[in-house]
Amino acid sequence: MSEQSQADSEMELPSKLLDEIEEISKDQRLSKEKKENLREEVKKDYQRGKFEPGESIGIIAAQSISEPSTQMTMRTYHFAGTAGIRVTYGLPRLIEIFDAKKEPETPMMTIYLKKEFNNANEAARLAENLVERKVLNITRRISLNLNENSVEIEIMDKRRIEAVAKTVKENLKNVSTKSKEDKVVVVAKTENVKELQKMKEKILGLQVGGIKGVRNAIVRKEGEDWIINTIGTNLKDTLNIREIDDKRTYTNNIHETATVFGIEAARNVIIREALKTMQEQALDIDVRYVMLVADMMTFGGEVNSIGRYGVAGAKTSILSRAAFEETIKHLVRASIRNEVDNLQGIFENVMVGQVVPAGTGMFELIVRPDEEK
Image (cartoon, rainbow, N blue to C red; front, side):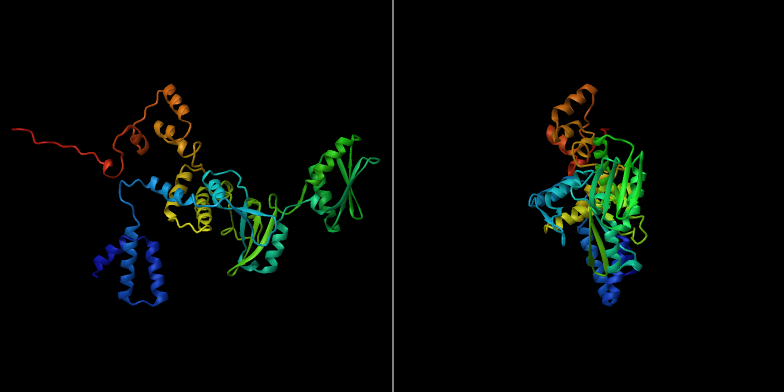
């Protein structure tokens, strides 16, 4: 192969693929000839993977994702090592992702540790400290003392008495606290029994440890990494912990990711979660279709759902919106606003029986015959 033809070949492949070819060639100790053969094979596959101008890639992507998804189950299953915790998978999880739900049914974080803290003891200690602890979780008994207008809280762990007293003082007004052996006594400035009862309920719900929203944490080993999986998510507060690797830790909550890391990170979570959900049920879907959907959901700078209030509802074509959902609403609104449909998309042209602007139909030919002399 001449230097010019080799340069042309390399120009047609992305730099990432060229780097991978170089890496594999070094690992396998390929000769120059075999390396060229490998490059040619990769180039052929890359060319086959491209789509042609005018191809209806959106419809193909929708078909490629939705057809295998009809084979998905509606099941949820228990997370390894935890009894009673159900993690949403299958079709319900896929609907959650593409509908861009504000709160997933099973919010989870996958937490990685920094190199110096990547061991079983640190992971176990951190997992225990991550779980949200409320006064209710560390209380042996709580009672009302009507003679002194107070609430007496008997704490299981004496080391937490000061923390409980401090938390109560910070969160409740017009109360004073004092410690008695293994008790915290909260004295209120009211003699109303109902008010004391309300105060008791409020005290039990106060957070005294851990990270708000994290209900459970499980430690597992994956390769060389000790990973903490949590049920419940609070990415912003979790990343403030110095032992945690903020470059690899992530949550399955798309909107929380967008808030903490930005819209590009949210796009990556959509792709990762959708592929993981489908691969979990052995569905083989080309990643580029999922990437296209993720791009459509996030290109405006915020996460939008695929539906009447998101991508589908934002189409400029009146007929296309009407064909999707809420037909009468869209037609009436368009007539009141005097809107015009320019018939530039596929759906609306199919509806009126015209050639669709795709494939050979996307070109217009103009004939200019020679003028007669």
